[in-house]
Length: 274
Image (tube, rainbow, N blue to C red):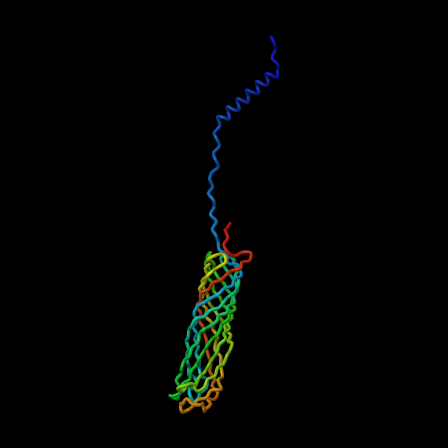
């Protein structure tokens, strides 16, 4: 009888162990699939940071009060004439915003052409002769700081700063036809406050509605080259009116709509929150 070799016995033992391991593995439960994790919604947030420029169009209303400061042959001192004309205005603006969500700070400059012109007649002491006051602002310029609150793609803001107005003031002494007229041109400085709402339509384009109040205070002007014809005729003026100083208190209201194009630096437009 032949003896079996030890190697054969070892092989049989190893094979039996492998079969037993496989059988045990077959009895184990199948691992479950990984749990489904839905994607987290990251809202798109509008970023107002950037340099911008644009145009605006709207209506302007002037509020001038002209008061005579000395008694003349035509008017007693203290006679007040109020002018309240309004007309279309248009212009351009440029500035920048920096957002510290949800707050926005910035600065802006504007230039606005004006088509406003108003004339008001003040009855004189002589029934046949009247005094006409004419105010014609030709343009406005402002330099302001801004502060706002961003509600995603809506920006609610307030602004304030310096204002400048180029204006023509005319006094006419009229008797049927114009007897005499004198025009003075001035650049008046003052301040402005206002505010508005801006909506970001795209990453670079936004639209806004804005109201601005401009206050130029009170200033004295001397119209010393006026004359009148005492008879009230339309002939050559014969009687100098003499010194005719007036004070002019001036306000302006501007209501405009505008478009801005934003040149973004390192920001601007919409981004996805993390």
